[in-house]
Length: 195
Image (cartoon, rainbow, N blue to C red; front, side, top):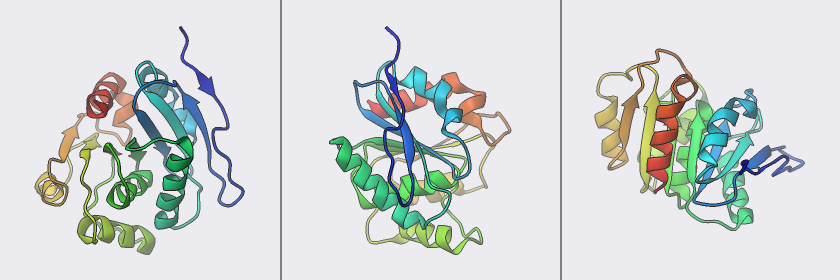
């Protein structure tokens, strides 16, 4: 049976979030698109994940504080009537996913090509990273950081000290899109985390 795919899952006037739903059964998995990218980049992964999971692909607004985006994501999760999603983010969207997990209940986070040990020169991202790393609430869910190339030396230990049980996976693709360069492994990793 073909995967259920419906467009315009969510639209809000300010800021505008748009999205699509793929599949209707299983644990919810939210795939967040990095600001400025198009959600169609997630389609090959979404279609495969939707065979066993309820997948939503969301475009983040290009502007807006990360903290506000995490709050809007929480409202979206509440509107879906679900709890404890797996939240997957690429680049800056991984910061939103991680901040959501620090503030709310998540089953897991998959961070693609985004280290959390900033600073990176963006005051908004730096504030969100500081809250994630040392804020009043810790991430208490499964956490997978996916990189195309090895992260900075010591990063896996740094991450595990702040997110107990966190795992860094180096796909060896050498690019910023390991989830697309090695989709089979990525789908397997996300599916395992969603159990």
